[in-house]
Length: 307
Image (tube, rainbow, N blue to C red; front, side, top):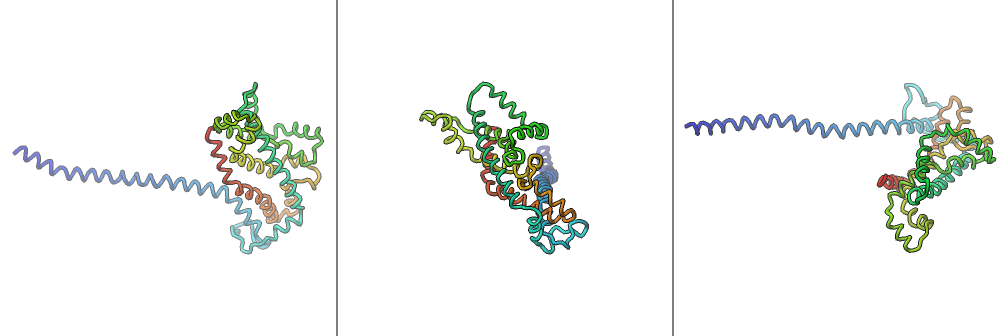
């Protein structure tokens, strides 16, 4: 009898225990599902916030450049989308300043900076990554130190050097301080370090010299990193304002960033024209980036293999 009663009690207690386990498991499953949903939602919310902070000012400036004279750009009645879009503000920019001349000057400096940074930065980066010479560690330490020194600290000495060379008020004087940067050398050094040595060793066995191994083997293998250096060099040279403002005196030699300051002086109350000039300066940057974006992201991956 005792065994039967124990079995029956055990059978009667089993459904109750199962019910308790099911009731305790339901909140756990719900909390796990809520956690899985909250993680992606928080990430998307942060991405949306960053998009608004980064893209928002650009869209607002573009909207201001397209608004007609009667549309408000400040106050509670302001809207993001212009009611009557117009390109007349861009025409006013060309009437106030010789914008095409300034674009040409900026293009000369920017493209020359791309060439010099890619070539000289690749040569210096290859030397630091592959060659063995006395003082290589000191050179690399000086390179890293140059990355943390603001240009404003050495600006006076750079200007005195440019003046002693007779390059004041010339586009070459604007180009010279940024002909090769520490960032360009560091990016190329990291890219060359990520390359396997076997390929270059095979070329050396075939009789290729140091220059041939650099030019024919190593350099074609880091085209993505060259794109990274090119994009950053173009960006820095095109956007630079302080150094061209100091070096250039003749308005015919002004770059676009320096020439745009005349818009705010002539049209002090018409921010639409200032916004249109800003858009003219931004368009080449977007064009270069979108043209090289695939190689740009490929180059970021090359530098991350052996950083």
